[in-house]
Image (cartoon, rainbow, N blue to C red):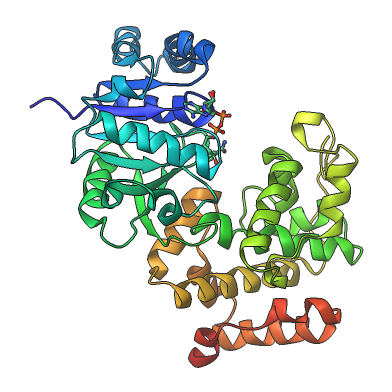
Length: 376
Ligand SMILES: NC(=O)c1ccc[n+]([C@@H]2O[C@H](COP(=O)([O-])OP(=O)(O)OC[C@H]3O[C@@H](n4cnc5c(N)ncnc54)[C@H](O)[C@@H]3O)[C@@H](O)[C@H]2O)c1
């Protein structure tokens, strides 16, 4: 039987990568973009994205051509009629996504699944005004979509059937799909915050970015928090932190550290601007004498954030561990860190010590999740 047709709207960074994922898995992909040049050169960009693997002998030239030929660009949503699953990766704007899905649902069959790749909007809010809200789910891919294994699946109540169909198709396309709650930052963008935030707290206390990164490298992290901020872009990291901070009512667990704001204001955005926290890289320093306690401090905050999320939603500990390992290349997930840190009691001890030393406004940052307290 032919594989179901996939629709993609938005042929920017994410949409083109998502189109590649399903085209590689043998699906015909119908794709569109509001911007005519993005439609016109999409095939070319897909072929260019495949070229390095062809040149490295990892992908047959004929197969690369077959993948590119599965992408068919159409003029607008009305051209997506044959799609069984339509994924949108357009601008991160609630009204834009709602209007787009309204147009898509007029064009497609009643059982077509509509998936949003939003990073920060609520899937329920996007689906609210639609005629068939139960068809709408979240499929959150990571950048670059063809490389990153992880996809967060958000299934609001009533959309279980649509969610299951999206999961089956996406797993068959080679992804690891984890169930995420429809809450700000889903799993990865929320649970990652302390990795950067606590590193920034240490920086503001006078530690050097390179020595904090060295401490994390010694604890098994492929990239330290500052190398990662430089890679992603300090501006992108700041926007994600601010967005979560606002969505969480300004809770100090999502504090926006001045050191990050100042770095962005100074234009030190990381690799893309040629200067950042640890860019250009100097000679990597040896881990400092207290490397273990630096890593333990950051990991204790990661454990606590994951525990809050698990407690507030029905997100499983396995899903959180898998998401952070695959989404951030962490050597272990937060619940895997618990044992290494000496169990819940040891984490509580680190948190309470930090709470005592923290400035008044930041003390609630270190409040332990009741789940952790119950375990200790
Ligand atoms: N870039 C990332 O790292 C990343 C990761 C995960 C999720 N996301 C999310 O994916 C979505 C797209 O992000 P991106 O980085 O690919 O953006 P992008 O700017 O690279 O691409 C967006 C594309 O959508 C098109 N577009 C905008 N409005 C449209 C409309 N109404 N109809 C059709 N096309 C329209 C634009 O012309 C553009 O080509 C956003 O919701 C973003 O939050 C981004």
